[in-house]
Length: 134
Image 1 (cartoon, helix red, strand yellow):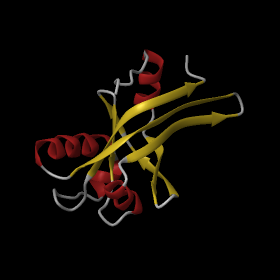
Image 2 (cartoon, rainbow, N blue to C red):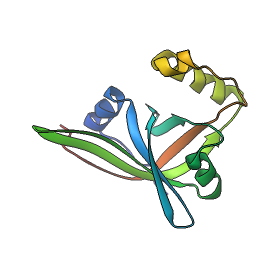
Image 3 (tube, rainbow, N blue to C red):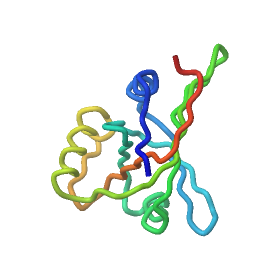
Image 4 (tube, rainbow, N blue to C red):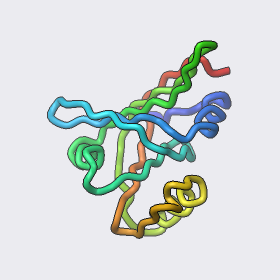
């Protein structure tokens, strides 16, 4: 499958935001929750806990969707992606991501965790659509 590319406006929009909604699904029942993310090298990284429905769903069904949006009375902007999810639970990639999340998000600094206590989810886009971005 071809890699999804992002134009400069989309990359700028993604880097200026820090929250999105992730949708996962199991047994035909969708589950959508707001999460913090980091966008890097064309993929989205999200911290989660082992006891969350999104983690449970991704272990059973690797498909996910994300929306990053900004709505106001003067105009709407959004980027929606569909993709494949995987978990990162340990090792150098986990450590690298943890440092990035720790540096960027105060909630991580206030409630830190260690390898083995909570994983990251990586969503690799397979499809995208955006609007209102210039």
